[in-house]
Amino acid sequence: MAKLWDKGFSVDEKIEKFTVGKDRELDIFLAPYDIEGTMAHITMLESVGLLAKDELDPLLKELESLHEMALRGEFVIEDGVEDVHSQVEFMLTKKLGEMGKKVHTGRSRNDQVLVDMKLYARAEIKKTAEKVRQLFDILQQKSEQYKDLLMPGYTHLQVAMPSSFGLWFGAYAESLCDDMQMMLAAYKIVNQNPLGSAAGYGSTAPLNRTMTTQLLHFDDMNYNSVYAQMTRGKMERSVAFAYASVAETLARLAFDCCLYNSQNFRFITLPDNLTTGSSIMPHKKNPDVFELIRAHCNKLNAMPETIRMITTNLPSGYFRDMQLTKEVFMPMFAEMDDCLDICIYALENISVAEGLMDQPIYQQAFSVDVVNRMVAEGVPFRDAYKQVGMALHNHDYSILDNHSTISDYTHEGSIGNLCNEAIRRKMERVMSGF
Image (cartoon, rainbow, N blue to C red; front, side):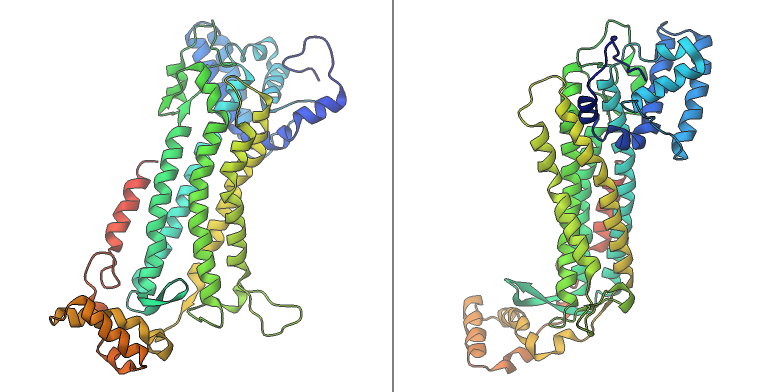
C-alpha cells in the first residue's frame, strides 16, 4: 500500500520495519482522537474555502462512522500502513475517492500526532484524576472512621510520639491534594492546541487555528509553530512528572501497609483473600498487592527521566527520536490506573488494630505529652525535658502515667483536630480546574 509521503520509490523492508516500530500497535489507542482532529480540521478547511460544502458533509459522515468503529475497538491499521493518520486517510479515499485526498491540506503528520497525543493525554488525565479522587475519598472516610484510634508515630523507625489511624490515613489524603496540583498543571500544559503548526513552520494555507482550538475544546493554543513541535517530549515529560508524584504517594503508602501488616507491627490486617501464600511456609499471608503497587509506582517514578533521555539535547524541529516517547508514555496511564484501582479495593477491605498504645512497648511515646503538662504547670521546658529524660533513663516509667489524651491535641492538623473538611475543600478546589 502506498504511503502518504510516497514519491515513487520503495523503502528497504528492514528499514521500514525498524522505523515504523510500535506505531501500528500504539496508534490504535489514538484512532478516536486522530479522527476527532481530522473532523475539526476539515470543518475549518471548509470555512476558509479550501473544501467545498458538498465535500465536507460526506467526509464528516464517514469520519463519524470511523469514530464509532474506533470507540467499539474495531478500527484496524492494515498491514503496509504506517500509522493511524495514514489509515484514516486511506479509508476516506477508498470510500469517497478524491475527497479523501483533501483532508491533509495544511497539515503534517507532525502536528497530527501532536494533537492526537494531547487529546489522548487529556482524556486519560481526566480518568486518572477521577480515580485519585476515589482514593482520596476512601482515605478521608477511613481517617474519620478511625480518628479516635491511637497508633505509635515513628521517626528513624523508632517510636516517637502518639499518632492515630485518623492522622495516618488523612496524611495520604492531603498528599494527593498536592499531587493533583501537579496533575492540574500538567493538564493545562496538555490542553493547548498544536494543530496548524504543520511540520513546525506553519502553512501558506489560510488556516484558522482559533477555530480548531474551539472545536477541539482546547483552553488555548501553542501559538508559535516551532514551539508547538518543541512540545513533543516536553508535554509527555510534564505529564510523567505529575504521574510520578501520585506514584510516589502510592509507593509510600504501600510501604507503610507492608510494614504495618507484618507480625512485628500488626497495626493493620488484610483479609485472607487479599493475601498470597508461600510454596514452602504454610503460615504465610503475604501483602503482595502492596508490594506490587510499590514496584509499579517505583517504575512510574522513572518515567520522566526515561522520556527526558529520549528527547534531551535535540535542537528545534522534528526528529524521529520523538516516536519512542509513545512507547514509554502511552502505557503509563493504564499502569497508574490499575495501581489506583487495586489500592482503593485493598484499603476498603483492611482492618486496623485497637488498643495499640496500651502496650508497654509504646509507653515512651507519651514522654513529650508529660513534658508539655509540666510546662503548663510552670516548669521551664528544658528542665521538664531533663526530668522526664532522667526518669526514663532510670526506668521509672510511672512518670508517663500522667500523659495527655487526644482531646488535649487542639491545633490544626494534630490527632485531636484532623482538619479533614479543610483538606476536602482543598481537593475540591483542585478538581474544579479540570
